[in-house]
Length: 94
Image (cartoon, rainbow, N blue to C red; front, side, top):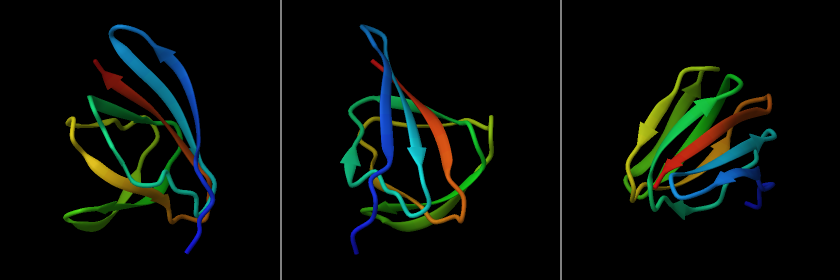
């Protein structure tokens, strides 16, 4: 199945952090990728996403303003499985 691509906008890239805003229309995905840095996700909107991972798939509910973090080496594809668009800011720690 071919899905639309989520939109990303890199806002900061310096010696300390990479900050990227991600916007996900319904059914949009990031595509499979691996994180080279520890990172924090800051949801801007509520949303429902599917995380496809090597260990299996799981559904996650985003809540605006409720942050979470993951470690370097995380591999996944993020898919918007909700009816509405959502966005988050990803802060990678160098």
